[in-house]
Amino acid sequence: MSQAGERPHIVSSYDRELESIQTHIMKMGGLVEAAITDAAQALVDRDVERAEAVRSADKAIDALEELITEETSKLMALRSPAGVDLRMILSVMRISGNLERIGDYAKNIAKRSIVLADEPDVNESAAALRRMAREVELMLKDALDSYIQRDEELAEVVIARDREVDQMYNAVFREFLTYMMEDPRNITHCMHLHFIAKNYERMGDHVTAIAEQVVYLTSGQRPDNDRPKADMTSEIKLEE
Amino acid sequence: MYDIPTLQGATVDSKEIKFKCRDCQVYYGDNHAIKDVSCDLQDKTVTAFIGPSGCGKSTFLRCLNRMNDTIDVARVTGDFMLDGENIYDKKVDPVQLRAKVGMVFQKPNPFPKSIYDNVAYGPRIHGLAKNKAELDEIVEKALRRGAIWDEVKDRLDSSGTGLSGGQQQRLCIARAVATEPEVLLMDEPCSALDPIATAQVEELIDELRENYSVVIVTHSMQQAARVSQKTAFFHLGNLVEFGDTGQIFTNPSDPRTESYITGRIG
Ligand SMILES: Nc1ncnc2c1ncn2[C@@H]1O[C@H](COP(=O)(O)OP(=O)(O)O)[C@@H](O)[C@H]1O
Ligand SMILES: [Mg+2]
Image (cartoon, rainbow over all chains, first blue to last red; front, side, top):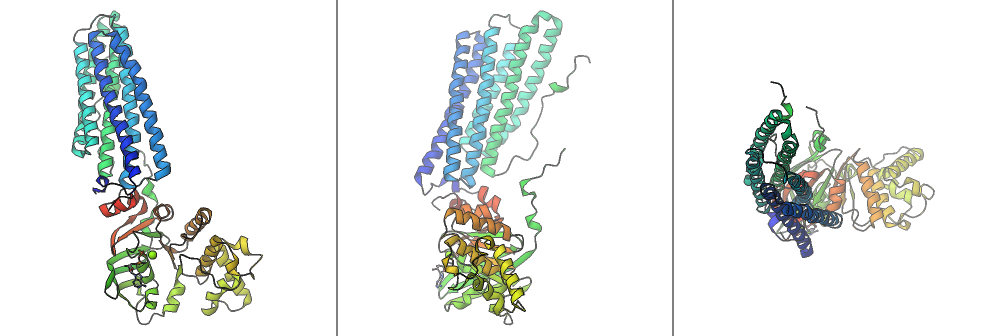
């Protein structure tokens, strides 16, 4: 892999445009990380105000995605990027899409936490969800770091870690299923908690997709191995 | 699992090799202009030569039909095998060779003669037609291949120099294909043309690919990306990278190529 991407362009305004797009991506990444943290904390603290803040912060994430789409399409039309520039632009478009989706899941968690603020706790479930949130948040942080540093190795580590999130999801899925079978009065909040867990699981998939973009960007190759898939819940039946 | 066809699926690589070039050197006096270049040029393929000015694109192109023979200070060594025969072999007649390996230049250069005579010139000196009817046929076919027949069929007797720049260039391409060449060399064929005329010539190049091996030198990377299937990047007389055009423009393997195609300070 060549190092030409580190040299400046002959036309310096081209570099400034690329930098501007990079800055938006990093800003977006920061907002999404904060949304994950805040949504998780709002759930634990039954903090409706904080949950509302997450919902409205999502608008800024969406706006950044639109800005990135606008700037990248303009750059494609006017500069005809090639080589490492082309790969960067293509990854930026996908990464911003992934970040936007993760933001949506955080918003959805915040919404559900507002409903759950009036519901009783279910055993240890909040702690399990907190662990999922923490794992996804760390994965996202590493994925974004690997993007900034063009660190293919770190990106591969992130991809491998998605398995853990899947396994956590399997565990809480079974747990919620048990509570719901034990007492139908648990169904409402267990359903919400389950969707929250599912949201974290989906976030993990989008973070993995970001890490895959880093592999593409640095190596020019799509990651060849099939992604580890450890979400088994699609095969679970109620009766054994 | 489904079999998903890939973009690379077009089996360009199974094409026959038209030109096999090995260990090629060109000197202009002391100036070592082409350094140890080896490459295979495929049949029915457009190969683009790209690289900064003075890197040797035109020099290497001119080796392929011995146009460098006409330059006193030029000295060419190495193997240039066209269908297995070295074109620098003593028994090869350069004039015959140039009918087989046609050339189109940067500036359209029709002879100051009629459109008909411009195209008929080559077939006449090579004795390709037995009579006027056959010659008419050859001229029409060439003008059609040059994608200019419809525009000139009613004025074959008027002067070739009276055509627009784009038409002149297509006339020159028709003239080059009139001798039934197997390889067409083009040295920046569109640099004197406006965007519409350029698009017409590019469309023509794409059609020519069905029958010929086309090699085009261009300083426009977009053009190389648009018209070619293979791209060769030259730098300071070296052939730095040679590969599928799609790969060269998305994921080149040499940093010098990457710098050049992305417009970086190399
Ligand atoms: N007719 C010539 N006589 C002497 N030197 C030449 C001649 N043509 C080209 N050169 C030299 O050979 C080198 C390569 O030139 P050229 O093949 O024209 O490059 P390009 O087509 O890539 O711009 C340059 O250094 C140029 O000065
Ligand atoms: Mg030249």
